[in-house]
Length: 282
Length: 351
Image 1 (cartoon, rainbow over the protein chains, first blue to last red):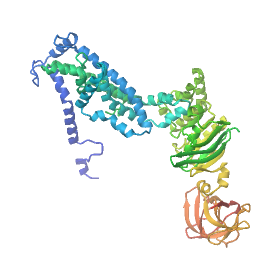
Image 2 (image 1 turned 90 degrees about the horizontal axis):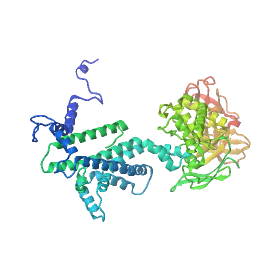
Image 3 (image 1 turned 120 degrees about the vertical axis):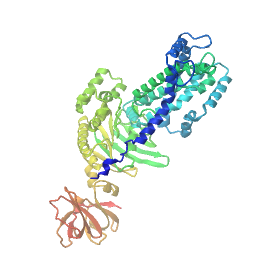
Image 4 (image 1 turned 90 degrees about the vertical axis):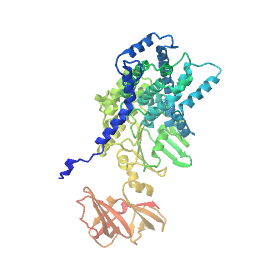
């Protein structure tokens, strides 16, 4: 029996000390600070951008709602139209990225082929490639084409950006599936393709869903590359919001931003619910 | 000829050889066991029979028909994998019904077959359970039921019991054997556990160093091993060098001679190996060397409760004798003892 052990108990692995706790709280605060600022600002009652606001009101929400239903003449596009484009592009990105990523993940885990390492590296290239350069490069490519693309070129760009996330999640899911279950299906009479559809894809389900939602979120929030590729009549919500702030900073965008953050939160919450803990890799 | 016939079956990976020149005839309705140490090619051979691995050479024929290049899903063989490979996203019933669904069997008929199989494996109540909720032994049974659901021509078992604990394994061995005999289905079992092979098999195929070493009934393999590899792999044995002297006698390194079964017609002066099973050796209080009785000294005693293993050194070689404790003589290390080696217990193996 030692008396001193009662005074100051040594930490066991997995227990958090006070310093570590404070540090974590500080870092978390840093992470949510922009969002908190934005939420506070959206309730501002003043007409300027002083922080903290001198008074509080719902005026910017009212203004936002007004813009949403009846855009003023200065806007080329209403937020409703931009929202429509954003959702369409995000959904198409999600579908195409998944259709590419699932077979890719299967091939990258099951098959041995020449240049597999190179293929893996290329897959994650969009993550490290400078966005501005990528946007510019895509613009040059699309402009050199003999035909006009509007929404479709946004979808193509977003698929490129979302693909690493989707492939990564699908590959992680594939790694957890032993080749024996697939072989078992074949022994039971399934053609190789049927075995993939009946056994591999259902077992990849959580990874695929995680990838799909990530693709949606990546596309929905994308700004830099989209900035190079949008046209005057086809723009996404982030571009629309930016266009409202270039000439004169309009606090309405804060109330829009709150809305968008809410949508993102719901999507991420859905992701966690669908996949469960530890299923998603960003 | 009916049954499964393997002719000159080979498997190479690049320059490495996994299975070399296998010729086997597996009769209908028998349980054949591929027994061998890990890495001997037994699983590769099974996978070639299953159609999951291509043949590098040779032929596989089933009832006269060449099936060597038929894809796995068209062979109609049932297989139980080492990991069992149950489908975790399906219930017990769905797992068992899967091969029937693939064959376009009607819903009602599927259901009837599933119920019949669950009765057979005594898991009627588990039909709607997800497979993750089953115990190891139950999962094992479901895997077997799924493998035989579509009435396969051959059942292949790839070390299916290796994940179970020792007690459950022993009872599953008996259960699988009884099921196999009841269904009278040709079965191939791959194992590295010779006790499992002895318990279950009609025919044991001993594989070693990528080739077939011996084919025979479990007792033949144990009593009459074809070579030193089999003698060494199956059971524990005293194997030591000897020289043939003719007239049914062999000389030991220490100069003593032993009488061996006369049926072994061997050239005089040939170097051979002699096998004596530990349970055939008899220990007695020291007496003069005479006949097949040698005088030796105890060098080690391993008393593990149920049996006592006594290592005795005599005539330049080490013998291990296996006795039950009540036969034991309470020997200590260094004590003198006489070892009797019955002539009919000696097996001569070419060196």
